[in-house]
Length: 142
Image (cartoon, rainbow, N blue to C red; front, side, top):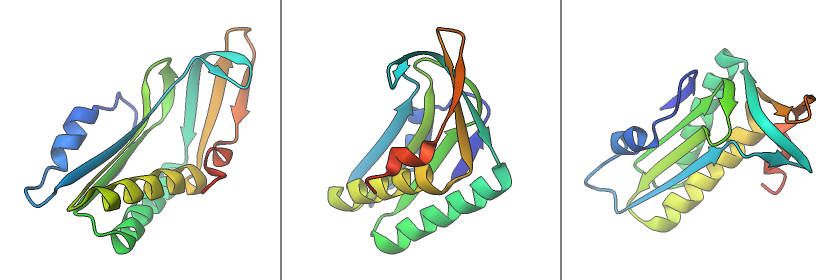
């Protein structure tokens, strides 16, 4: 389950979709729009996505996580378009028999998504300026 969404992400509904009686653990990540970045006050964000490639690569990342970590289900949704402060920009969820695999698979997925997907973020600042941010650096530690 990988999606690019134009509307608000509903983490509770997405988490419920991963429920499985064989799962002993759930790990989730939500990335939210914050009001600052690198000394600038941020007013809102805008994401541009090349959807065909983002969806195919997102599905590939989930399949890779399935091969590397014994988890039952995983999903990811990334927003596109204009987002306000506090909006959920990206959600990742993983269910697994054990917590370690859930944590590791979730971390692998979000780092790969940030590094590999054709998603560009434009920040709109309180000052009236705006600027494109290289999202790849968000996962530089990966």
